[in-house]
Length: 288
Image (cartoon, rainbow, N blue to C red; front, top):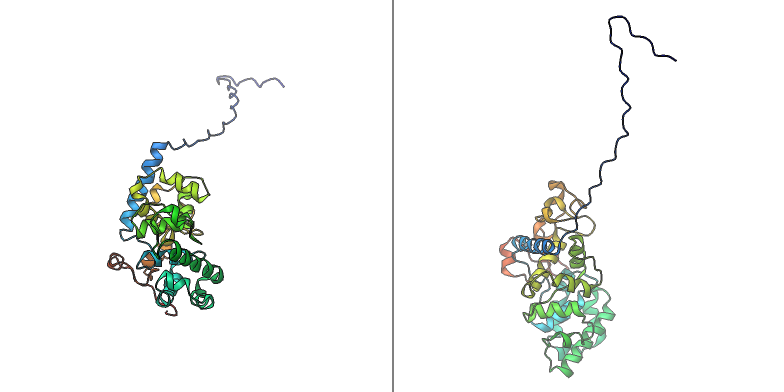
């Protein structure tokens, strides 16, 4: 159809040019974190956790290396709180490796029943007591290669003992540690030995033991597996996983555990620094 002529005295309307199709917004691709940036971020996280948990410590009650190695073996598949409520009776009955090695297995099973898997654990702790008695003169060895030969003792348990009973640095890769370092993108490894190597390369060896305490404390108190308290987290600004949990500060506070939530900790006899910071000792077995 021919275009309609313009009325006299009025300019003809120009046909609007066709609009170009809208372009999709460019996809923003985050640059991978450089090795230097990762090291800096990881060390800053540890520094800030050290300020949050200046009282971080092993949460198993012990008075000597023997008690610590036994308690650590018992802590598998249960809480440190339950172990701490159970070991006073065990160590009162069997204070030395020689005593435990010569014990009646049924009596040991009954004493450690609250920790779960008590038959397998009885076999392990009596076995390690026997090895300590027969091969190490009743003393817990202070070398990794010797510790891992003891029944029930792997690298994780060995590093707990070395770091906290002998002052020799080690990284303790438990479920909390592995979960958090993956959440923070320090490593994608899932094998504990590989996690240990990857994270150890980010920090000076002298910091390994306290690093383990800081991370584990944070995993137990704030950065929980199912519902992290992101809104109450002191390192939220450094965390790639921020937002996986509750971000509302008031709601997040209700998720806090142990001294952060005004609750008893996991040790019946915690360090004074923990008590000074407002921490409460755990109740004994059968206590409220």
